[in-house]
Image (cartoon, rainbow, N blue to C red; front, top):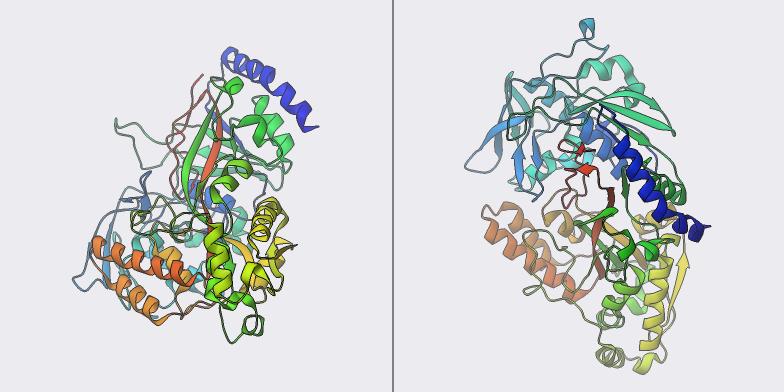
Length: 541
């Protein structure tokens, strides 16, 4: 079936392009599909990609990240930081209005103020909200004076201790500013009635079928020439869960954008090196971008856990042998079409400013040294080494089976066991899996978002391996208080080297986001957080 769809793909591209050129639509409408569906538009529950993508269109945060992952103004036009690094004073724009909504008198959106910031942040931390983002301020702010509105346009954030990545946290969709009138009016149904200040507002939502956003005519941002943003008149999201059907819709021109590439047809579209195949060049556009996501194998190292006490993975040299016992480059070429970069450095991924593969040297395929490590651990050529179970989800079965096969050749017997992704996450969170496939996506563009996974005082999540090292913890705490980037980056690299030395993980690859666009789509930007950025997007016929 998929081969038949691919056979039709090329002529359909020509037909779609011609139809678009002949059509004289006066409105710019972008069509995009979200096969994973959408649960809510409430920023307090922006826990996955699709929710974050929608929230980003509907709401604004105090600060935002640009295409280079630098912090830029958004609702806050400027800010001041106290000498001790514990007090942040944000000066808000005075030309920002909430979208029109029935929650307001006469349905007319009012001006956004500092009190809305206080309300939104308190709502996240309120146990009654049960926000999946409640953790972002945990242990960071005083309970009674963390959020203060000094006046309508001045908001103050107080921290218990200096925490440099706070700007990254404030740029997260969780920190979107909502209108209390809408939350109070709609109650639990607020998930379907968003009210923000973003570039688009919700027009229609038939759950599981279609969602339509319309341009917000009162949006405050302008481009470099003074033209109002966004350029698009509307965005139509569909929720077709079949990747094959999504592919067909894209080939017919019914979708303007297709995110990701399914394993079932990646070899038809992409070369082994990850480039668009010759027959599709000039007909569609392939865009790849660094994505702050590290794919890895986690190893439980809590010596008090019964799964660890007598297991071979308790031995550092076995963990190191696993890291050197398979070929990451070959894995990426033949299983991923080089979508992503082999993880030859640490846990912190390529794309962050502190990343430096020359200073944080990871693992290379070295079966001879891996066998030497096995012998030093008391298992020459793997003799006497019990089978090690590697838990994975079905989506990554090909990857984990490849690794298991190569480790077997090295002398390390690994057996892959497939679990549902929800069960696998639960097992890892409860320390019930000694060896498991996982990934970690940056919550904000700072290496601390990755290194927090190994801070000894953190539970699981994020410390799924239950790693604990006094030297690492000391460096982590020093980094949080460091004011100079150069000092903090040095500490980050020191911590990453400790992770490589102790090997509670097996880094696999640093991910890339991938999108296919029709030629008429312009200005669709991306960054390392893989956020859907539509403010500058256009449909140019």
